[in-house]
Amino acid sequence: MCGICGFVEVGGRSTPAALESLVGAMNATLAHRGPDGSGHWVHAPAGVALGHRRLAIIDVSASGSQPMLSRDGCIALSFNGEIYNYRALRRDLEAEGVQFRGSSDTEVLAEALARWGSEQTLGRILGIFAFAAWDTRGQRLILARDHLGVKPLYWGERAGGLMFASELKALRALPGWSPAIDRDALAGFLRLGQVQGPASIYRGVHQLPPGTWLQWSPREGTAVRAYYDLRGVARAGAADPLGGSEQDARDRLEGLIDDVLAEQMVADVPLGAFLSGGIDSSLVVALMQRRTPQPVRTFTIGFGQRGFDEAAHALAVARHLGTEHTELYVGERELLDLVPRLAEVYDEPFADASGLPTLLVCALARGQVTVALSGDGGDELFAGYNRHLWTERLWGAAARYPAWARRLARAALSAPPARLWDALAAPLPTGRRPRQVGDKLQKAARMLAHPTLAAAYGELRAVWPHPERLVRGAGPVAAPPPLDPDLDTLTALQLADALTYLPDDILTKVDRASMSLGLEVRVPLLDPRIGALAWRLPRALKVRDGNGKWLLRQVLARHLPPALFERPKSGFTVPLDAWLRGPLRDWAESLILGAEPAGGVMDAAPVRRLWRAHRAGVVDAGQRLWTALVALDWARRWAA
Image (cartoon, rainbow, N blue to C red):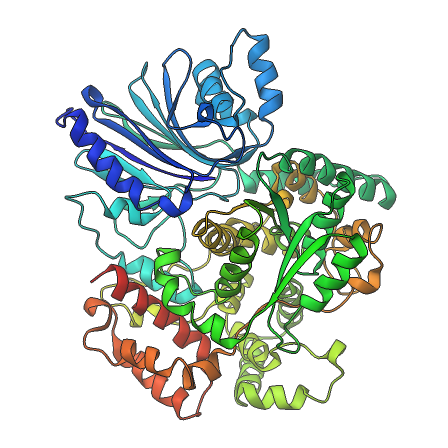
């Protein structure tokens, strides 16, 4: 993993020294992404500058340094990521007469681009990546991003040319570019708690969508094309459901994950895995441990918060599998101390509070390894989110009743405060008591007012119901796109999250947290080959007895006693309501009560009214306030 940046300016106005100075300033902002080296390549006649910060993983020698030129000099490449099937691609290239100087996957990618061109290369590589390549023959810049958006890539036009970077802070280093907040993107952030791609928080700067590549030339301008269509893959899978027995399905999935791990466990540096004790990470670690005689290094953060702490479960899994396990219990203070760092680490407003423990577990792992594997993606691909099943059931029941009946139900559910519902549910046994039942019921109430399932699901995910009222000059936040009509409800909800929530929240969270510490995180369950199989699974192989991820559970049961992983889905949350009334009160008030928050872009009045009600205990509005505060804190750091 690395950091990439660069630009092309039209007219070749700058000297080589000036180009080097500019790209060097961009590179310096990305030092955390690549602590092992810094490089640049410039071509003054074309006005091209490519920058690279290196985190050495494969071929840590100088022969893996970047930017890298293909042997014939046709391609100059700056590459962030890993190509997992690079060995097979290298053999294919060698069969065509290509000679190699080193052993890195970067060199394989450079030679593939030079030999096969962009489209054929992107159709053959498997990995997590974002790269920029200057084609000296066609005098064009090529940008590309991996299939599902694991690695970030921002781009925008500048002075008739184009600029790009792994993180926005590198673009800010370019003189003459004055970033302006995209008010519609800010309103969208307040709606969902993350900036929604392909927009960025800045007007005129875009995220390259997952599975696409961009080509720019001074004569033809900019064109963005898709090389991977996740929606098409999901539709094709639904049209060709997996046949055979359940045993065949288990064997096939386990064999495929094992093949993927054989590729993703390749590294010339220490490697380990995150272990939460949940189904996804436990399965990844179990199959990793089967592949190596040495104990896999595993890492867990514990919080000591009853009902939310999975560290004890992770320890039990680690002991059963025989991993070399490291756990660290942290208190409230360690989490609170990270809050002022969020704007710097995440670079855009980002309100998923699980980013706090993600930073801690990445720091814990980085003390021993340079690469860590995670179980991210299992929920989207194998129907693991409770909200998918819950929405399907609720909407299926509600749709049978007329609108007036749904309005009555909404009023009945939303009248009691969330804390009252929580108190009423408290006597239920732990295994049968939903977490945060009050919050869930109030969200359910809001869903019932909507005419379509897509709108209802959008309401379920919403933080601020009318965020355009908080952002001066913002238009109405776009309604959620319709759910795919060619898919059943459950699969359509999975796909909606895989297209949005996965890249905009989950993968953003992990990339920024890990790369702020120079740690590479790999996500084996998001390999496109596993995805192609997952989208073919009929419902009976995904959901049984009210629980998702049935097939994953069956594979894991071959390696772990079910008692170690069969329990209600958990996760990380923080007591935002209490924090904002207590240890974060001064921080919150400095943002909310300050003059002209966010430079006048945000209207503080609605936030202040909600803050007063929350502080007085009239309402519990921790999540909504946290999202607004994150935006204000980001603006104080980056928009001043």
